[in-house]
Image (cartoon, rainbow, N blue to C red; front, side, top):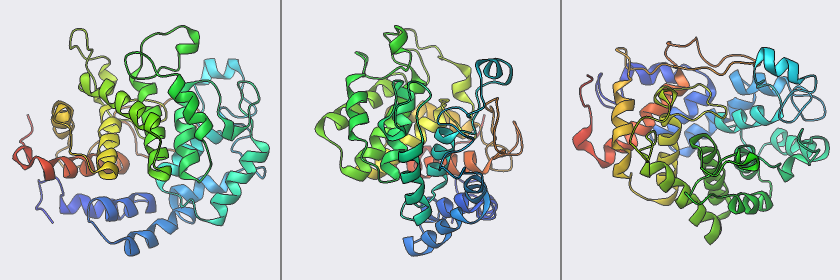
Length: 337
């Protein structure tokens, strides 16, 4: 293992290994290159210990969370205005369980899929949960979750392909007249298309759409306007934990890392500026902080507060830099400004 101060800092690795089982098993797989026989055993604990177990313990008898699909069953427009968007219903919880690595082959996972098929309907127009709804950002993550948990969601993929914009990406505001793609929606759709491709092999059309969405982000260096090169949103340069629907450059970089692992492609040089920004955000103790949090109802927090080191952000940052530095070692261990 590399010495203290490098991308794989011993003390930080140990800190991650002492964290939640969802962090530990991914650290073993992505940072330590442990064999599947070792990390798979740790992954099983997600269902029974820590964050994953806590979320599963909060599941309703009908398979949903907090009585609803996108928002809780007791939520209202007034609550949305005063409390902010809630994150306790089925959609955000299933997305989080996928990110934690809850094993889709377990009986608990399979039972959840069937219960949602029977009982969960979208707030938009009562559509069955696994049929998706109309907003591309929601459908993108429904594809990611559905594919991960073994659901046939090819019909939602087809709908996403039809919603791709001329600039190559997607925008959930398209139904309200938007004609330009957004970073937030595009990354949600890309994650869905890539997971669909991992599970099914994809189709020529879905692969072409995935590549066009990637090019949309790459042309903009993940955070700049194509028109004038200015930063689109300063929040893109900080990190969320978890992201929910929010975009940031770490989410995008981790996507491109995962895409590279799955397809065998090399890291695109156009990612370099975002990579160096990520490197510069490392704290003195070798960890990375969470910079933003999503306001609104949550079951519990996954971090110790804004500005504090985050296991999830640190894990993602370290595996992104490990991947990049293995291909471009000449930029490894660049001193911080």
